[in-house]
Length: 354
Image 1 (tube, one colour):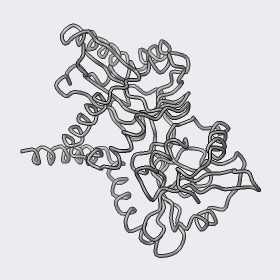
Image 2 (image 1 turned 90 degrees about the vertical axis):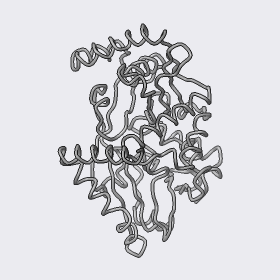
Image 3 (image 1 turned 30 degrees about the horizontal axis):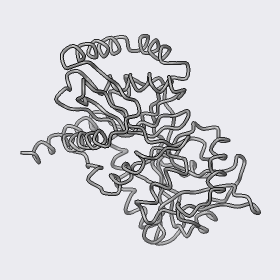
Image 4 (image 1 turned 120 degrees about the horizontal axis):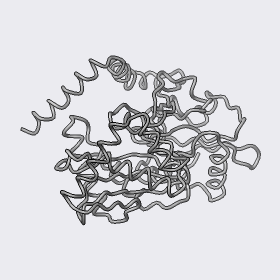
């Protein structure tokens, strides 16, 4: 067991090699750099290292809470979770948890192919993806076939935005810290406007994003993309990218220009730039949203649940997470109820602002 920052370079290289050998997309949330960044802002972050002889053959990044309650590293913000294991390696889940002194291990975005944990999943969700493997032009032709009105309308708004607001300029990898702070301000306002918990009100998330913004590694690089009209930012997105996947994380826009749909324009330009960089997939993340439905070309499964060992820690996990998870699942499965809940959240947010 080690803190993320205590791993040696040989262990980190082995971690990267195991990820390269995996059959799943190379999501940057599963790379050692993300775990190390979490370790700098979350003191309970740990990495279990599984050895065969002198060779590391597996890693389990996690966070350890009271009574040994374990959770996937960065749970709540990480969009891909699980163990990093040598292909074909068979482990006993209970023994692994005991070795980590964990009574439970919770996950909410377990990636497909995680045979060690997927049988303990309580729910399967879809994460929406954009395939640009064959280039942006091919992606645009797919949109033209499946969502012709959406594409035509968005491109028209982009042209009108340029005429009425100012010449448009897109930067795929912006390094200006002012632009990142602007994005965080927009996102916080969006959370409050829609009645949702403001993630950037939590210091550890703000610090984590700040650290990842300067992370530059081949398979985990912080990427801030900004759509400008002249010098004025209209929409921005911060996420992580590997050589093959852009993990979309925090998109937002200036609500003053909402009628132009600058967020949709931004995503089209991100897809174009990602394809030019050789990235084959944009992962829009779990959770239904109109813009995801319009942009996506497919979906991948992710899983939510927990594996537990008998004891007080497992009981505490159930009491602290299961009732809320089941309530959320009940609402999500009923579109009319979900729509009512969303309207109620927005109404409550308006009341708080008055």
